[in-house]
Image (cartoon, rainbow, N blue to C red; front, top):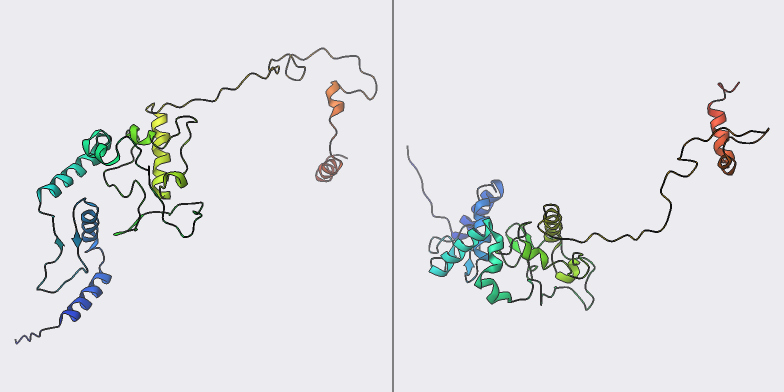
Length: 254
């Protein structure tokens, strides 16, 4: 048996690779997530123009992936994923945000001088990140969780107790939905305090002293044409509804 080998140019190899990638996208799904993880790491420049490159180049380059700072950032990110509330007490958070909320100073990208009434649906689609992600999507260490009370309090007005509108904070619709669910869960479990509005007593009589809900009085001396209770005479039925009922039960009214 004789085998023939031929050298294909780099363009042909990349074309075949793209076809294989389209036929079996599940093979490269972990690669896209790894690429997205490297892009979100601080201080890392990730360069991977295509799933397959020429033999002279490496498969994917991360200029500072093997540095000590990047490994520390990856370890911190994994630890904050399990305990996201520890990030708000860290020195890294204080150095980046200080005492301001995470959405302070954020400006949305939009056409014209008048912003739209709704923010974008999501900032991350697959392995692509928009140019100006929202305050939660731009920082991978900021994770919305019902136990992350300090983060949730930044999106609640201290005066009214209402959640800030996403047009004010700049959150995308996906993160805003997670935020609302986390706030409701935290309030249900007693982690967030909220004030129930005070309803002043209007002075209406809610007792059972009314004749309609109280004890049945003794039957009065009725004359012809009088009703059993006086409020029955105040109720005037609609003629059209009475006609419909009579037509429906015509056979039984004979």
